Length: 357
Ligand SMILES: NC(=O)c1ccc[n+]([C@@H]2O[C@H](COP(=O)([O-])OP(=O)(O)OC[C@H]3O[C@@H](n4cnc5c(N)ncnc54)[C@H](O)[C@@H]3O)[C@@H](O)[C@H]2O)c1
Ligand SMILES: CC(C)[C@H](C(=O)O)[C@@H](O)C(=O)O
Ligand SMILES: [Mg+2]
Image (cartoon, rainbow, N blue to C red; front, side):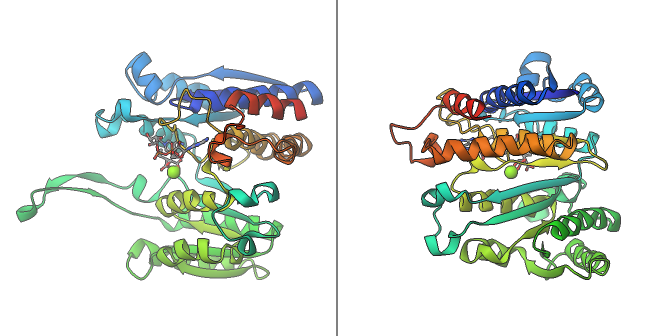
């Protein structure tokens, strides 16, 4: 089969981790007889520099007409003084909105081989841990009304409105419950309904959806408690469903259970099979160009693309097995070994994983 993939390499380590992912996908293509066709499209800081805007219309057009999108990361200090609505990060939000990617799946798994890279005590993570954060991605405070006004005695003020419609909560809750049906049948919904109206609506709608899934246990937690429980007793979680901003924060926190944010992939899905696949981490400007970036989060995002958008389960598993083998063979990127001298570089990591396919 032929598959067309739009590629946003982006900024900082984005192009470095995407190059290794393409290397691995090409190897999968050779082995299983698929042809993956990659089309580079600019977005983020690189697009500001090249064409003067963070998300050119042509990028959106090509992304929409592709079978899936692969994205590295956007942003960096170089563009810190760009006006808010033209920041590189707006390209990412624009793509998510334009492509209708309302469901962001962020699995956090502890690989046994990396137990010593996790800051959690061995008894907390032994026997493996497997959590998935289902983050609402096209609503909430990221997309509510924003603006500036007079703050009276306190001077100029700025605001961002958190807003959720029932239908938005319902569709993301269904994604979480459907996922729980295939896993250990437990959903934890995270909100701040002791304070926020939008969270009270969230909690009510999630409870309504739960009625259609009598076999799934639903737990509700306030986000402050959830953040604490994630490091105190992560084993209580299976599927966590939450809003755009809470999901952003909790998924970075969950990444630490696994040892490094360089290990966390994600799938951003629309209705149907279309999706954009990106690591949870950012452009890591502090290590860009040093060969220290861990490409595994992006490589595993490539595996998610094969599974969720292309329905290629066996091929996806071949990537996951290749990553497992890389780790079992004792190789570590800098983030997984405290920067020890024996760390492999980004390119070596990609080569070794591709060779394991
Ligand atoms: N999806 C995205 O495009 C995305 C996501 C998050 C942040 N960002 C942007 O990236 C820029 C930097 O943000 P930040 O520093 O807050 O977060 P970051 O995720 O880029 O980096 C946080 C820390 O994690 C490390 N890290 C991240 N990815 C790594 C990897 N693959 N291997 C090894 N170490 C890794 C970095 O070196 C840094 O110390 C900002 O402009 C931010 O807006 C983009
Ligand atoms: C860069 C930023 C807009 C983005 C987000 O907050 O969604 C990032 O942190 C992420 O987690 O994908
Ligand atoms: Mg984030």
